[in-house]
Length: 363
Image (cartoon, rainbow, N blue to C red):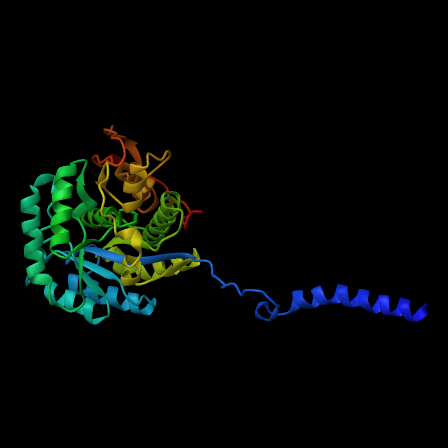
């Protein structure tokens, strides 16, 4: 009887211990188990792009100084590759444009087509627009760093004019060009414009506040667009941030890259971003006059804000006046509010000086 009880006790221990032992073995060693691949979560990824190359003099530097500073800052920040979208019609002896584009390519960056003369598609026919693209391609093809990417000036693909957009998009495809969509836009061109105007007017510029406003706006625009793109696609594709070749960018791009990384973003190359299938949109949209998330969200009739608030020029101008110039509006102008994706644009209001306030990057 004692032997029987001992045998039963040993058997019970084995029955309990064996599953526990299996549970603590590596997956590949568990009998009959199929090892599952470990999929790392994909975080926020973003590539940088700069439009309107070569731009003329800005608020702080000569055009050549701007290029040198921008290249050095991108290198120091560990940005392997950004995309520079060129307007060959702006290249001339006074801006050293050809040499500057060559310098970007020599630094490892890539160059795309932004049309020859930066013409708005709304103002010309599809045929004239494509002829302007052809002029740009004649100059760009074969240059170091060239990519067959076309970015619409002003991000305007014809808006609601479906026939014109279709004619241009099909014409680009026939030329071997793909649309270089933007996903994140903070209207940095307006910050640059406000800075130039303030310098010309002899107004005092709080440069720390200018840096904070620029960095904060671009990071917020990236986060807004990431959230919207998740809504419309169900995932987080790599973003393409729209910047411009400005003095403000040359001055603060290192701060922006550092802030993006603190916010959880990984900087990827333009090649890597545009390899994602989200950028291969071949269908029609109800309206295409802005970023890719906006166009898809508009097509899906999504509720809620569909574009980043600071792309509304009166909002952005007020922030610049208050935070960078320490001035408050004394007269507000009424603007015609048009339904998304058409954005409000109206003249600058009058401003009066105000007492300085502590400044910093807002939450």
